[in-house]
Length: 170
Image (cartoon, rainbow, N blue to C red; front, side, top):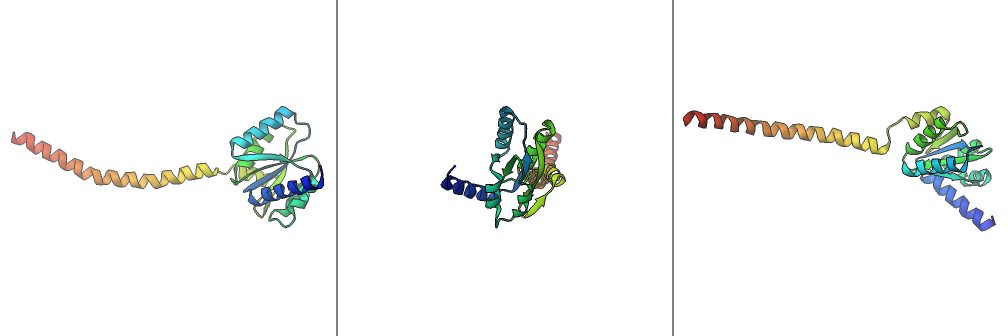
């Protein structure tokens, strides 16, 4: 890898650290290619991504970024799982770690907040952005349906009374 490629990689990693809602750092010693592809596919399906990068280049990319304090986690064979959704990457990493002993979560960052292993686990248990939006939409829709029912009920009652009066008159 020549200098220009390294500079490009540092820029890409810098973008990842700046724009991601969450970055999870893990060790992946002993994972097979198939297991790594499975992790990448899960992350992609959740709206995230997985990146293996040289620790030294990642540390350079971290300089001046809000999550620069995770540089201490970058030792050994590390992999970065990240997503714009603040929960997706943590969920993917946590679920994969439960199924695979060779994948060990070291910690991560959520904006300026550094997460330890317990922090990553806590974030992974939070509802995702889509789940929150669906919950809020359901809450907003419920009062509207109640109002529509309340408005429609008197009209139905009046129609029933008129129908009864017609039947008696005839």
